[in-house]
Image (cartoon, rainbow over all chains, first blue to last red; front, side, top):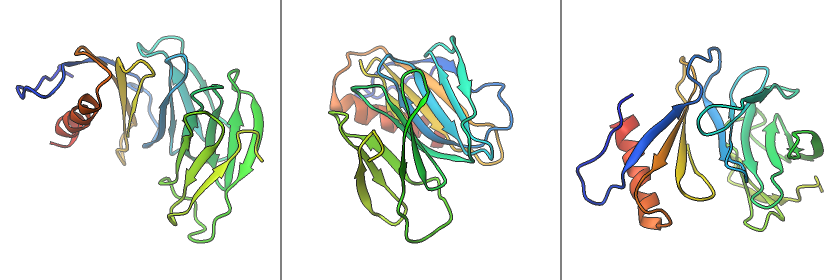
Amino acid sequence: MDNKQSGTRNFPRIRLIADLMKGVKGNHGITGLCFTTTGRIVASTWTQNGYLMEKEIHGTAERTSSPPGTRIQSLAVSPTSGVLAYIVKNDIIFLDKQRLVVGRGNLKRTAPKQPRPQTSLAFTPDGMFLRVLDTNGHLSAISPNGK
Amino acid sequence: MISFSPDNKHFVVGLWDAGQSARVIVFGIESEPNSELMKWTINNLVQEIFLG
């Protein structure tokens, strides 16, 4: 891909750094994408077995894992603790910086019951709560320790 | 979807492209960062690159 710069004065100059999923086959669309507190990139994909990718911006130091469950729907990283949260089915799973499971939460969905990839996650700036916007338009808050 | 690095010097774009491999593309911002207007224009630039 060539670098593309617009001639419009208001557009900033950007350059292509890396295409991180190039050559990785069998992964469907990106469902979650976030920078970590250390500047790494984590992404999740809509695959049956779950796929979580974590890489440096230049594509080095790859660390991938296949969390238990199916189809990761969304993810977020706490700006303070670095805890990573992602959704599998009706569960929210919290991983620490070593990517070990440190907590779980539950999505209390009403309808539709079928998991959808549009559910969104975002930590509050102070890292105290994980905000969840589900496909019904319900906004809720969950503590990173799963309570 | 799009996410900006903590220092606003990079951003990453993830594509939902049914039937094809997922794409995660990293860009560097060479202009002066820390501007909400810049974020707005980058979002529009990304739209232009991938959807235009």
